[in-house]
Length: 252
Ligand code: MN
Image 1 (tube, rainbow, N blue to C red):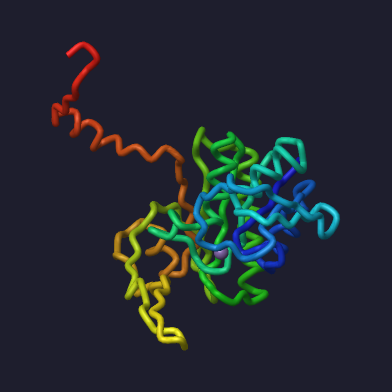
Image 2 (cartoon, helix red, strand yellow):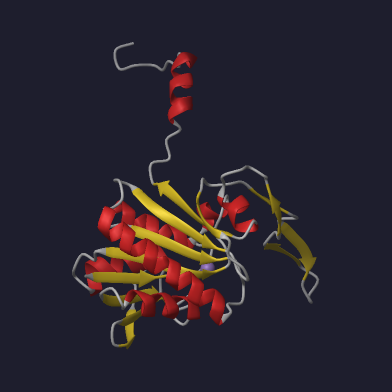
């Protein structure tokens, strides 16, 4: 059993180390993670420059790239072996609703899923971890991982787990919810009088849609959302066929 552990908070993140320690009870663990915090880089792949990987401890690689780079490099350049599972996290801060599209944590799991490897992304709804939060998170991830290894996951499907902090009422299987953000771009002036813009809207809440990740975590439940990589809107696909779109064809 070989498990690749990665994240987007960087190789020195306590969440990553706690996750790796838990996974080590199931099999051999290799960590391949960004050498610094690369949160919110989404599914970015580095193509414009070469990547470097440094083995900072035995079986722990720090890569000057994105989480998606780490999964690629890990499997095709460093381990040279297909892992049985890829686990990403434990992220500092939840990845629910719209966050999923920005999340490097989730994207690393998505990358593994695209390669046909079972994958789980794990986030904790707290900026600072307590030992109790981490212990509860790793306990649950172990339970879930054992189940995934036994039952498998459907093709193109991976799991996004969000864990509340402070309390825990149970586990819910959820759908991706809808988050709302406050002022998304802060405009200010630097000391030399030039304007700067800083993206980073604070979350002001979420739409109260029952059965979603945001809803579950806000009520103190661990949310497990099965995601798939195929983004097609099947229902609208059918609707659009009635648009009768036409174009100039080769023989017109
Ligand atoms: Mn992060």
